[in-house]
Structure formats: C-alpha cells, structure tokens
Image 1 (cartoon, rainbow, N blue to C red):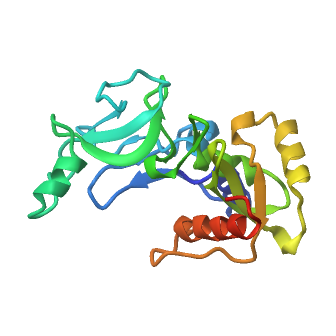
Image 2: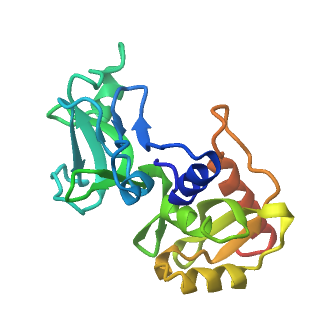
Amino acid sequence: SHSPAELVKKLKTKLGCQYVNGFGMCEGPVTQTRLYDPDPVIENTIGIPCCPYDDFKIMDEEGNILPPGKEGELVAKGPGVFTGYLKAEAENAKAFTSDGYFRTGDMAKINEQGNIIITGRIKDIIIRGGENISAVEVEEALVRHPDIEQASAVGMPDKEMGERVCAFIKTKDGKKLSLEEVVDFLKRDKVSVLLIPERIELIDNFPLTKAEKIDKKVLREMIKIKLQQEGKL
C-alpha cells in the first residue's frame, strides 16, 4: 500500500526533501505520484501508471469494472505487466481475469483525477457481522495518535460477529495506552465507527516475515490464544 500520510509528512519535515508515493509488484504493475502533484495526492494516493500504455482498472467480485470512487480489486494489463507465471497453468488461471487482466490482490479505488488509492489487501479485510473493514484504514487512523508509533489491525474471532477488530499497538517510548483513550481519540478525529478497534494489545516489537513486513498470521494466532485463555472462544 502507499506510505501513510503521517509518515510522508514527517519525512518531508525531517529530511526537507521532495517525496513521491508509489506502488510496485514483481509481476510488473508500477505506479507513482509526480513531484509536481499537490501534497494531498502524494500523501494519500499511489498516483498513476508509470507506463502510459498500462491499463489499471477497479473490478468487483463479479468481474464488473467499477466507476471512479468505488472500491474493488485493482487489476492491470499492458506492456509493463507480466504475462504469467512459468509453467503454472493453475496459478495463472487464478491470477488473471478471462480478458487478461492481472489480479493484484489489492483493494483500491480510482478518484476522478485518475489517481489510485490503495485501501488494503483482499486477504487483509476484517469481516465484522457482514461489514468489510479495511485493516489498512484502521491502521492509518491509529498512527495519527501522537503516542502511537506503529499499529497493525487484525480480525479476532468472535462467536456473535464472526470477527471483531483488534489492534496491536507499539507506542512511543513505551507509553501505556488504554482502549478507552484510543477510542476517545478516534471519535474526536471523526473516524468511522467501523474503523474503531474493539480491543487493543500493546506490543514492544512486531513479529516480522522474511520480507521484514509485520507478520499478521502470528498476530492473529496470538489474539486467538489469548481469547481461548480468557474463555471467550
């Protein structure tokens, strides 16, 4: 996903440099904002395709192309996008649409100006009582809190709702934060009620994958074990 707006602002202030936001995959789709873009575009979008001949679209679950502002899966086709995995027919059947668009696995929307906004990973959606909640949007809301250094949202299993939002939080200087304090901040920040965590877990260091990304599989297992110990599952 794009770099969070708060991180972009901090980098520009501390380093005093120009900044662009971008998106890229090994499979080829690459986008980027421009140096001359206004701050809101650089801070909140991944810009437009770097290759002018690449075609990026937003698609719903039925394969329909969605209009600007509507959220769906980001798909891409063109000379800058690969044509398939070597000797992997079954994998390619899942990775491409019938008309040759590569499924990025990212949830996104395109604004009226053509800039792409990543809202999360399809596998990183928390489904609470039938409502789809973007973990990325939860995390971006949380890191606006002055005492939160890093946050990662996952779905915790729940008998009634299926899943509820749990946020793992690393605070600045080990400061203690309560759920009530976090909720109060988010409400004052006018964050959608769907994005407000129903549980927080303070953490000193996040488990990482080999790619140095937060390992959400481990976080989900951690909260599942805690809930079992508490007799809530």
